[in-house]
Length: 357
Image (cartoon, rainbow, N blue to C red; front, side, top):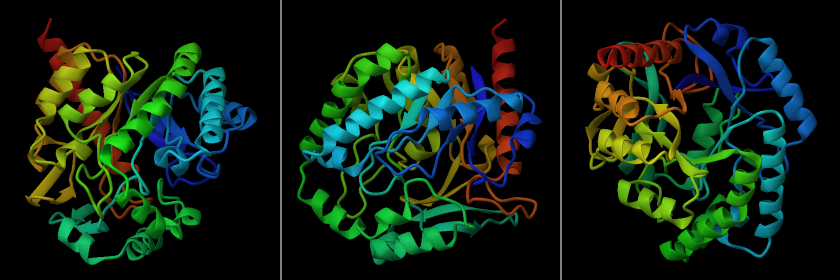
């Protein structure tokens, strides 16, 4: 297991590599190039410069997050083949700098959704929050404006401003698409890409839908154990795997997260884990919380134990953090709370490991 942290390259992060290096037990980072338009090739020269920057800071670069999939691929349009070819070329380029795992998602229109980016918690910190009824009262353009205007000036993955004007039309498009057609479009992508992932030794790790239930009638398919089984059956290569995000799946109270981890970790199909806690006030109303079990609904000890007991040897990152100690940063991605999360998870891992000896 390797503990890593998400980081945004090109000066688009309040957190420095020097600071990340000082977090005990964190060996590397998973970055993205946020200025590359969705669907275009990530240039090798940019990736080589990124690797040099990361390695010079004493950190590893073995995971890339958010090589986003062009909407034409998800829609199954005739133009998808060009974007799939670009994706394959990006995988090849990633392999040339030593990347072993690529985290991506297949969520339609927007990668994730929250009703608030700085919800005040009782301890004085703020966190990302979701209220389903409040979301349904808003139109998509207002949601996009709210996220972009409250991002502290940082890029928000999945909410690229150039795509927001198309959001309303995209939502209408998917409302006329059957869920089975969406599955078919996903399989088309996997069957085209996975042979090259095998060739270049880059494991593909899909992120669950966030939230894991439908909003505005959009298809949500990576959201339960049953649907993850179906996804993995679309292409049975071990290079077709999961990013197991406990917070995204945990937003549905019906999901048994330790059981899900045990099932798919035992199969060797979890390549990357995003581990965070979440606190519900009612169904489909939740805030993100500090990582320890006492702070949310999830039993983090049982989750980490499920990873350990079932031979997980991939990458873990503490997922979104609260804003604490007056930090000003990209919502969810400050330094302090994620550093606390990393050391907490490493402590759980060490305790579990030593209890087995």
